[in-house]
Image (tube, rainbow, N blue to C red; front, top):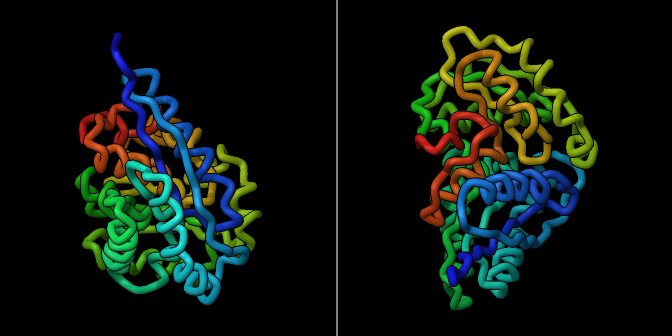
Length: 252
């Protein structure tokens, strides 16, 4: 009798985040329809209500506690699920954050692959070979500018962006997940290699990804898609999950 391989997926999430514990499991549950591995999901939360640079910095300091808690559960991979918190801390900070969280788990006797949504988005875009992109974000414009600067520092040009200017994180998570289908029609995508339909782990977009990609004919991804992709890569698993855009086609 074949024993199913089960993996524990750990996420460090802002206390007001209501999206990553739905979208990431949705991707992995969809994957179970095509592959034998099974998954369970486990989270630890950091306080954050308003998406401001000051509150994000305060929240980030709490990520070490969350990593320690998740390492107690011996999760198989751990993801820091707040893209803008990382990007607001300065260019390249996802590498620093990943190292800090890795050391916490290691010191607790639970060596664990660590990813951040910020690093996952950058690495997902590089995997696609994207040199120029356009993106949609829910943030106030100054925070979107930090995100753009961060991505461009990683060698990817941001041609155009739309900021929805929503500061309340719970309101961000309450947006219609199909809204990006229409909103992205306003983006300038001339000459771009990919579109980020949600440069925020809290703004729902998962049902929009394939619809937008089918319409524009170039890769479309989101922070949650990139996070799921990087988790699969960290676990050494196939990234073939049809219906969620090119990054999860299994080609990368």
